[in-house]
Length: 243
Image (cartoon, one colour):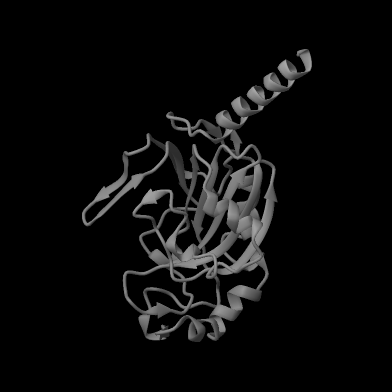
């Protein structure tokens, strides 16, 4: 009888821990991030509860599906030229994204995982037509995937260029209570600029885009060739501590 009682107690305790781990928090998470120059320009924080609009600027309106805290900043001085802008964002959602967790666990590429549709944490969600340079990584707070994305409002699939190219990191914390979504606008000295459309190449198929020389460039070049360097952004993100 004592043994049965102990087993029942153990099962109840496990269920309680599992329930606490999987249930999303109602309050926006609190976290610390070590941000040093030149990443520290115009640093700010925004907090939202589930169901609130994270962006309301017609025709765009995005609603978060979970409590979230977002921190924003710029790498270097802010500029009006889109190709020279390096804005960044780190968002911590108080929920486990099964899509993000599956992206790390799988060996499929970003297109097979339908990462172009976004992380599915906001409605609608930001997406992109490109998921290049997919890598799986470990951070001090958990596991993640990183990749290069690009999105424009046009129907065309433009070759990678400075002005819309972003480096993104999607991850889940080790305790599986939080999802981390980070991105920064990056540039490469050998890519064309958004302000110089005469140099653009656009495609009607993903396979054609993948054959573009600039797509191959961003897939294979060293991470420090970008501005800012991808490793430098990873180091900042590695300092994330959720309270």
